[in-house]
Length: 135
Image (tube, rainbow, N blue to C red; front, top):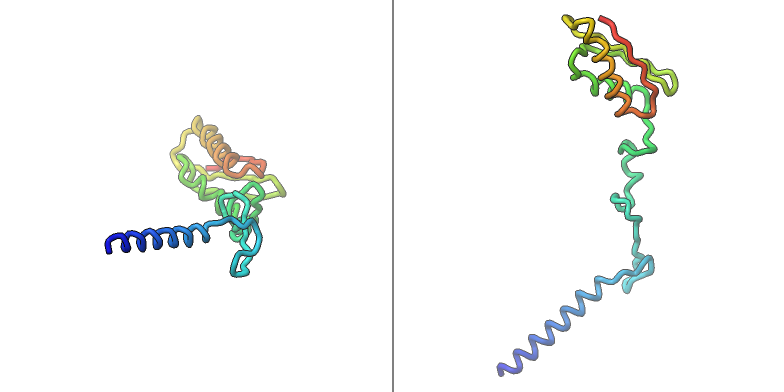
């Protein structure tokens, strides 16, 4: 009786392992046993969804001036010495006017302008950045 149970357990194990291995094959675009065609995607990390999110940053990203204006203002608003900013676009050139915080000394103004230009040039390489300040 014990030998029968061992044989049945062995048969169940073999059958279940065959069923599992049957579903693990790679068809490379061919039809499987139930007639469905499998798909394979490039190994881009997005599994074929790279065009599903058009605002996802990338090297071909292009947005409008309003979005870039808001992003530029957000990226420099917390820099020391910056009270407010205004950005004007002319094609691929961005003219940034920075309103300085009151009490800023004259020798600190070039440092603030340089920091603003550095942050914007790093985050927006598609623009030529021009920075000037006003009190």
